[in-house]
Length: 174
Image 1 (spheres, rainbow, N blue to C red):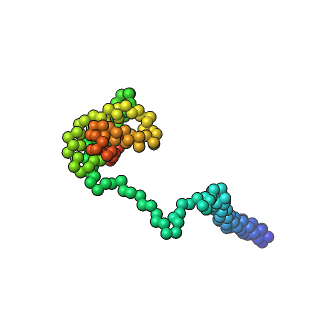
Image 2 (image 1 turned 135 degrees about the vertical axis):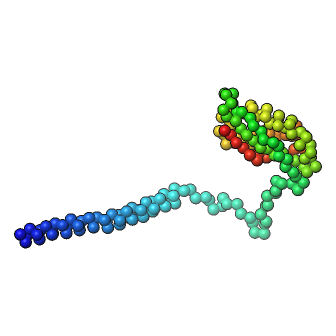
Image 3 (image 1 turned 60 degrees about the vertical axis):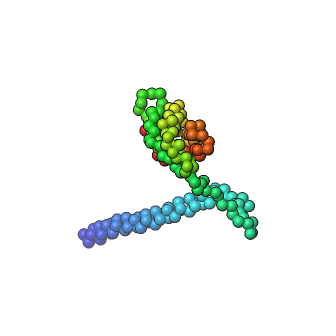
């Protein structure tokens, strides 16, 4: 009977010893796996990323000053905000629409000419926006084209000496 108790104690001690060893081995194994994954990720990025040639980076010669970009804002410049423009998009039922808020860039002395011509400007912008298809808005390059087209229409209505372009201050496509 003492032998049975001893073997029973040995079997429970052995059963407890195996999971304890497995737990510590599991934590160490996970840590090694994480370190290996980190090292593999770093090596992949380091060796597969093309390096730029040394001479490719532009640099100033000694004693040469860097060129400074000019500001696009002129000292005598004003912005005249027009009222909201709401236009349905597409030829299907009026479920999709675009809402724009546009500001006209002009000289400070020309702001009254812009406010007087606001109905004509909105009409010109609305006629253009009605011709735009919904698929055009899916192209990211279209937005600069749209701003150019609106600026061209403002110059046609106001004259080239009055309008210097447009700013789209709010844009909503639903």
